Image 1: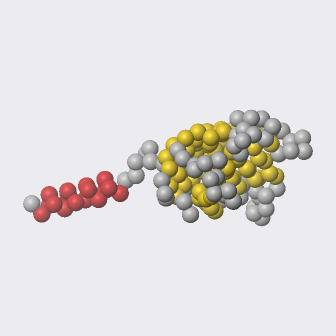
Image 2 (image 1 turned 30 degrees about the horizontal axis):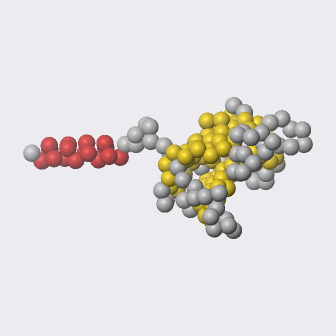
Image 3 (image 1 turned 90 degrees about the vertical axis):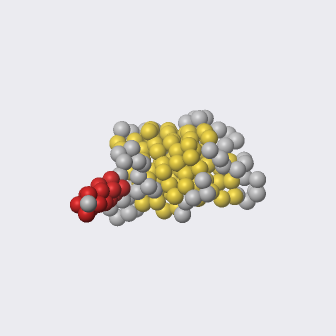
Length: 163
């Protein structure tokens, strides 16, 4: 009887300590930029707040890729409360993705942002939202200015606990 209890307890401990393969990592922004996968696992800030106009709200999520010091910002400036749903940039709704190329000294050497001349070039979908957590997807066409070629951000995902 004692052996059965020990065996059962061991099985329960092993099963409960295993992570599911489909479980999303906590506090991560991942995206493919021009075919290169990036993982931003150092989240600097994540929150939703009101703007200077009380009826508006602002989402900001900022992360750093600790492998190369690249930086990413996801932003929505909404005319009402930010809720679960789809947001894309247009003249009345700033939806922004900002991407900074880093280097070992932690300085940003190149900056790219949502291409403001292309309506609907940036999309952020909030798939889950609570008081403590936000999840979703995003894509963007990013412009570095000064004649630099555009960058495309595809397959973007975020799973963030508000800081």
